[in-house]
Structures are given as C-alpha cells and as structure tokens.
Length: 416
Ligand SMILES: Cc1ncc(COP(=O)(O)O)c(C=O)c1O
Ligand SMILES: Nc1ccccc1C(=O)C[C@H](N)C(=O)O
Image 1 (cartoon, rainbow, N blue to C red):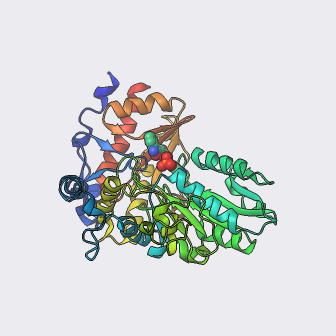
Image 2 (tube, rainbow, N blue to C red; image 1 turned 180 degrees about the vertical axis):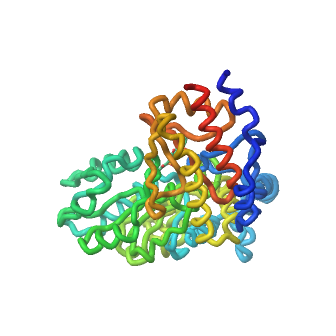
Image 3 (spheres, helix red, strand yellow; image 1 turned 45 degrees about the vertical axis):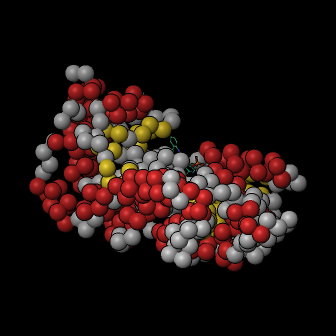
C-alpha cells in the first residue's frame, strides 16, 4: 500500500471508550477550540512551531489595520494609561511570560531571538562572575545555537575565556573554581530528557557558579520556577509552547540581584532609561527592560501577547499533569510493539525526567517521518535517527494520542 494512504482516515479512527473518558474528564479540553488546526492532521510538532490561536488572528488584524493603519506613529504612545501603547508592549509580554517561568515581571525582557538573548545573558553572567573564573561550562550536546553563540562570545572576549563542553550528566563534577557559569538546556530537543533545574542550580550556587538555563522546550510546556530554584539567568523561545508564531520574539530572564551589576552587552536605546531624551550616554532602564536592545517588533510581539492569553485561565500544575498523561499514554501504546517495529525509546520514563515530548530511535527515522508527515501525522525527524513527537497539553486530546500511536504503528507495519 502507498504509505500516504496507510493513515488515510487517521483523524477519524474510532477511539476506545476509556480514552474518550479521559478526554471527558480533562479540565483543559475546552482549550482546543481556542486554536485553529487543519482538518485531517494530527500535529505533534508544537515544540518546533506552536499552533495558531484564534486570538492571534484577531489581534494581528487589529494591530495592522487599526493601530498601524489608522493611528500610525501615534500608537507608540497612544493608550499608555490603559496599557495599549507599543513602547511598553515588551514589558506587558514579559509580565505574562514571568508567571510561566517563576519570575517577577521586571526580571524578564522580551525581544530578539533566543540566540541573541543567549548572547546577552552569557555576556551578563561572565561580566558579574569573579575575574579568575573564565570557563563557560556547557552540555557537549546542547542545542547547536547555544554552542555556537557560546563559541562566538568566548572568542570575542579572548582573555583566557574558554568554552568547556562536557556530557550533561557530568556537569556537577565539573563545577570547579575556574568555572564562571554553566549554560544548560533544561529539556533536550532530541530525547526530551528534562534536567532537574532546582538541584543543578543549587549545586552550581554552592560551587560559586552562575546558572543560565535555556527554556526553549520548557516554557509553556510545564511550570518552571526559576526564582524558587535560585537560577541566575535564562532564555526561551516565543514560537514553541508559547504559540507566538514563526520567528516570535524570545525572552530572557535575569534575576533581580544581578540587575545593577550585570553588563548590558547590547546596550541599545530601547533599553535606555529614557529613550527619547536622546542622551549621549547609555543609562540602563530599570529592571530587565535594560536588556531590550532596539525597536520592539510590534507585529510579532502583538501576536505573542495575544497567544499568551491562552494561559491566563490555565492552572500550570494541571498543564503538567496532562502533559505527562499524554506522553505516558503514547509510550504505553507503543511499548508492546516497539521492539518488533525497531523503535527504541530514548525519552526517560521517569515523569520528573521528561519534558512534553516522546522520542524514539529508528534506523530509517528520516524516511519514516517523511511518510508520517505526508500522511498527516506531523512530528519531527532529528539527526541522526530520531523520531520526535511533541505533545501540547493546551490543544491535544487523549484521542489524538491514541490515533497518533496507532498511526505510527500502522505506518511502520506497512513499511515492514
Ligand atoms: C534549545 C533551543 N534553543 C534555542 C532554539 C532557537 O533559537 P532561535 O530562536 O534563536 O533560532 C531552539 C530551537 O530552534 C532550541 O531548541
Ligand atoms: N526555529 C525553527 C525554524 C525552522 C525549523 C525549526 C525550528 C526550530 O525551532 C527547531 C526546534 N528548536 C527544535 O528543537 O526542533
């Protein structure tokens, strides 16, 4: 059978009563209607590009037609009293993200890409570390952009700065007196392994090492408590679980205790205390706003702002409970057939040790994923041999999980 037709009726595949009962009891089930997803597709790639929410469509129309089209330049300041001005839009978005990551609103800055924010927080951290500490420690298998930005910055700084790459599970053993900071991605983009942010942050602090967390696959997937963990700096993506849209602005976190001392490497006028004073010298804005560099990307910030409203009525603990139940169910459905179908689970089974995705190794992972996508089951392939399925508790049902698992099984059986 051609592989495209193997899953022809996947989205209407009958679902057992016990699975439907889980959806009937799901306190987040109603959130699905807030999103626009194409018919005939099971979308398991919200950890690469989150889905489009209805609010975003309306907001983007409003901001283009009304705020830009009619009010034009006035919108930078118009409605400042009611919190509608473009100037303070990054701060309003920061406040919404702060709640999701256990931060205070003035500890979060929004704008630019995750890569650029990584540069900003690395420079800030190295700038406040003791001068004899010149090593930046990281996971040797960190996401490429984290490694590349760290390479670029240590090369730029020169002066004995060094990027030291070690396996993620050996980080604790490398928290030595020459280490300034450790840069880690909490949830591995391939395996979905979730590091213990609180424990590692505590170990690092005890060793005098600053922590920098990449929350790309954490923020919006489950509650993060940066301040509870005493983390120093963090970054994250706006377009994955926050659903801000392709290329959405990213965020950074800088703990309050560092605001006064941390250098702002990209000190732009939009992070100045009074941009329109047009002063000759940089004076940082209060709080993390100082890390905003240039003019806010109003269209994409507005989309992200609207997308974040999906979280306003969501209990983040319930989000985590559902996410774990979705990933548990997917693994449980594939467990009995995995070996026969050459699937090797690489996601930790221990709930505390996984994010919101399930990944398997498969010898033909690239071709299998291409076939699955062509058939309407959208996951992701990651080199060299990983099939990755992302679950988004805001818009996935247990029926989706059941159909997806059966679809993967049917596709692999058809190829065998
Ligand atoms: C862990 C991690 N960091 C950073 C990024 C992306 O950075 P940027 O938005 O700058 O492309 C991604 C995904 O692209 C990621 O998975
Ligand atoms: N920004 C992108 C642009 C194009 C394609 C994918 C991405 C991703 O974000 C990939 C993601 N970081 C991942 O872990 O798969």
